[in-house]
Length: 191
Image (tube, rainbow, N blue to C red; front, side, top):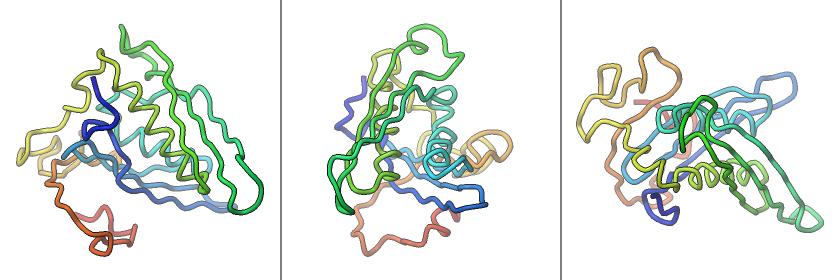
């Protein structure tokens, strides 16, 4: 069982999205658990949809598909520009997953002033609630051992045959200060 307060839980390492009128929304995410790292990019119908699709693509092999979004709620907790909102998300396991893994409803929630950030954090929390079930034990162990080649031929290469926008790799997780991190999102996925 995954304890969602430990390094076994999937956490959103970083994300970016772009959206606007008359353009397709795009998002990219990096999610990790312990030393395992997955990344993906996607397009969607708005920033939240693009972020959810990017998380789904990154975790497709972990979850055996895309979680089904059952509910998405945003509630204002105050007035004015500094008011916090609360985002609540409910998901079910991917369609077609059989047995105990195919059952259940899982909740995630986040509150803050950035509704988009809270939306993706609540989604990841709901996925962690699903993965915390005993029948999902080992689901995040889908990557090769450290130093082994990823499917597709090279370390850090495509996570599946054909390039689907997903990348899976094993990394050392050094401790870094915020100012040491490359903050330019367009360079996050460069080899």
